[in-house]
Structures are given as C-alpha cells and as structure tokens.
Image (cartoon, rainbow, N blue to C red; front, side, top):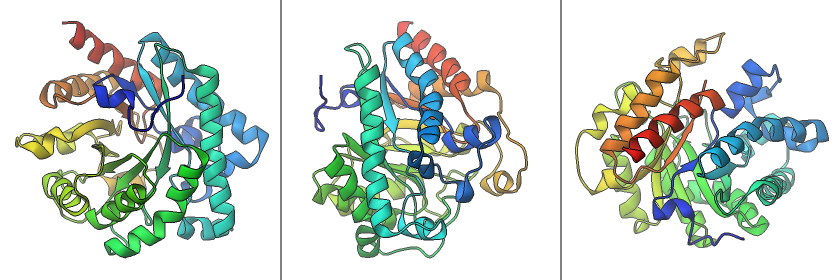
Length: 317
C-alpha cells in the first residue's frame, strides 16, 4: 500500500529502523573505493546498484524479523553541488542522480515492503561541507537556495520524506527545512555533536532545535542525532523540556572517538555493540517519543540487531 507523506508510520510511534554506516561499511568491510566518501556514484552502474541492494538487504530482513518499519535512505549524502563538482558532476547530473536515487529505493520498497513492514523512501540531504566541522557557514537564505535543487528532485521523484543528515549548524538546517516546506515535503533534521554534546558550531542541542523550530514554525516533523556516540550526548539530554520531546531518532556511531580522531583513523572502530544497544535502551527510556533507531559510522546490521533485541525486550517488559 502506498504511503502518505503526511501519515508516516514513525509519526504514530511505530518502531522504524534505518541502516547503519553506509559509507564506512562499503569502504572498510566491502573494500569499495569511494572518492570524497560519496556513495551516490554507485547508482550509475548495475554493479554499483547490486552492491547497494546487498548492503540494504540484511537491514530489511531485520525489519521484517521484528515487524518494524524501515526508512530506506537514498545514498545521496554527498550529492550536492560542492561535492559533486569535486567528483566531476554537473548540476544537471546531480538532479538526475537524486531522482534516480529515489526511484531506486522506491523500487526496493515496492519489492520488500509488507503490511507488517512498511518501507519509507527517504531523500537524504547532506551538509555542504565536511559534516564534522563548520566550513564556511551559510545564512539561512543561502542554505535554502543551495539545497533546493536536491529537495525538488526528491519531491518530483516521489520520495516519502527528506532528511537533512549530519547538520553542523542551525542556519543550514533551517534553509533545508524551508526548502522542504516550499515543496510540501516532510522533513527531518538530524544534528551531529562533538564529545561535549554541542554541535560543531558550538550550539547546544536545545539551542539548535529551538532555533530551527522558531525560524520554521516547527516545520520539521521531528529531530534526530547522528554521527556521535551516545556517550557524547547523553548528558545533553538530561535537561527536560519541549525541545527534547521533538527528538524521535538516533543514529549513533559505533566508536566513542571524537570526530577528529575518526578523521585521522586508518582502521574502522566497530566499538562494543552490546554496550551500544544498552545505551539505546536507556535513551528509549529517557526520550518517550524515540522510535527511529539505526546507526552511523562504524555500525552495520549486527549492531542494529543488538539494538533491536534490547529495544524490543524493553518494550515487552
């Protein structure tokens, strides 16, 4: 049954899974060369598409096993004009690829979704810059204009929603939220934080969420945290308030290392999946609306399996 953009299953509190660390899995586990850490060029060849399908399959099997929804991301985190130019892609190329990415994940959703496992096609917008630090911060107007072409391509291709992933400062997030609102697309904002629980821009999670909500009339359907270990943001969530209730998703790193340490690493740190799962369980107790769980750098389907077991045992109890 086709999904409605405004009746997404995670908005009812339904547990929905995401994948883990796409790029780190492809590079370190599968030996795939990803210049600029960009996965979107894989969409250009049958072999690349097969590789992406093989990557997503175990996550979809987990969702079926646990009768959870699955939010399947387009591999477009790097598919913006700055990164595209570095890889030799024009603006027209990127618009075409963003649309193709949606059609690719929607085809997977059509093949693998069931009534017990709805699959949501999610258009991923990445940061203009690095994702670990603020490089040339944009104004809201600049960010809206910069990211609008990709959001438009997602909307035209029929994505169910859009997610801005690994946001480092509120202004870029606000610009993306405004572009999505203009296209009548549900949008999720996911911030990353440093080891002190603050965004790379220095904003607290509370300040960033409140700034985006104030500037957009609370247009994001919810917020997430990604690309940080729970140790880095658990304390930041101790403070109550309406801002915290806006967080519905967590995609944590496997490693407890800082962004700077991960940037310098030559080997993948897969962390402790059992400890990570327990921390997700604790976060589910603290954040009453947390229903979207997945992973980020260093995680794979084995981490998510441990997280599912912990979260569903907790729900049963």
